Image (cartoon, rainbow, N blue to C red; front, side, top):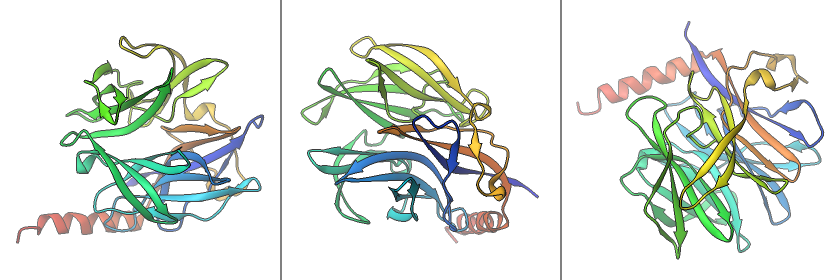
Length: 289
């Protein structure tokens, strides 16, 4: 029987050595974790991949309380695949930039009310398939980094834009190196140094993470690799022996106020996913009949 790649999110507090797993919902697996503090609450947003149905990814969230994460709730569901829910607060409002390459645009959504009322307020890069868009404000100037997909699997190029008056500058090519080009989380500021997180897809998609120290952003970007992180470097505290499995990849890292989150890839048998894929193929084969 064929094995399928699934993902699960884990977290730890500053000073802890081992990560704790967050249970996936019964209807999906979770990946691309992003943390945000909004109105006094800490939330974790993530892609929820609906592998048991004919659907793809939706965006879900859960709240962090008293050292644990609660139940998952779907917050955004569209007619196209969603992932990498980059959430941020600006002027006391919550915004999200989810990856939506199937729609060929980069869209910014403003939360109008929990749990699922979002309004699109900005659209960039129309007719361009970009993924994993990440923002940084550096020396008071906002920048947007995004990965434009290539023709081959895992290929593409990392582009940077300067944002002024809600308009984008001409793009600057950062790198096409598949071991670090695709973003893997928000930029990190630590001890006065800025770091960019990239995915290492040189061996396979989502094999690990690459951390680069950013020396200069604009107009001539410069960075250097300082660390690579793989599943073998991650220690998991298994409270439930059912989750004690071999992990084969990770591709997102984020932190907030001493709380760290990552996602871990593993292979598993899934009868429901096999049946769902058969239904999908049948739908597409008969689409125009």
